[in-house]
Length: 169
Image 1 (cartoon, one colour):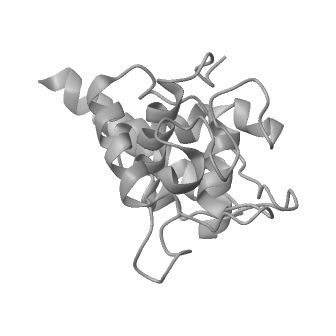
Image 2 (cartoon, helix red, strand yellow):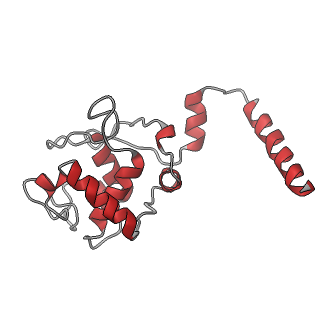
Image 3 (spheres, one colour):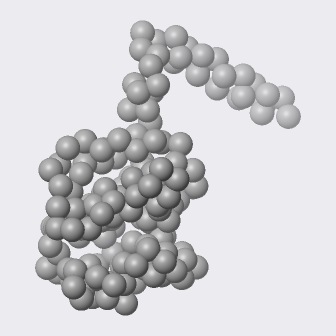
């Protein structure tokens, strides 16, 4: 018990020292946390997503690494399929992401090469494309609507469950 207390006190003191640095703005604090820098598919401009929306362990892991921890997770794949259907992705991309009116999402020939990675596919789903797909990210479709980061990761897990690649390569 004493060791836990001492460890906790040491952590608090170190955090206090770090908080007394010359920069204290929230934006700078966010940049210290965020390992992955998101860019739009449309023009490669930096994309700002409120870090508070990465509120699950899987979303936090993705934010730090760009790797989707839901790949191969059957429960997440089922939930991703529901969202894929709910947001009418199936209408353009087919029932498994194989492509229909819109491009295929599972093959080697992505319309946007960045979609071969889970970070790239996340950016495309979140912010949309120049090719006609609107943004699906929370607050971009409508003020209180859209997919949260955890939802997007589950949709990607569903898509990757039909693909030759995982996107985490």
